[in-house]
Length: 86
Image 1 (cartoon, rainbow, N blue to C red):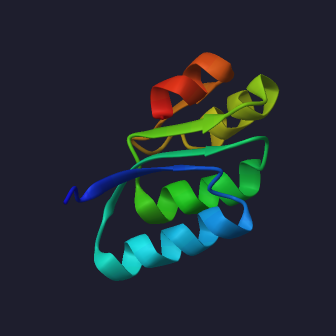
Image 2: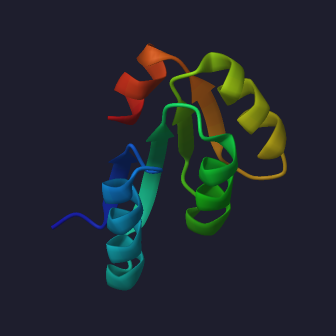
């Protein structure tokens, strides 16, 4: 069993529940993805410290990158970045 997961759609109901389970099981979150929820992904990234955070909306990704500049999380935007996270 792997101890590292990527959460695609981390801001939706299932994604948030998956993060709760990951926390309870002590799983490492390697990547978080969402469409455009900058505030929620920022909070998740600060809590779970993924290597990668992706927003499909590239303008929102730029905003997220600024907000997470003080962390080690790499922020990307667009469809190619979503594929990388998967």
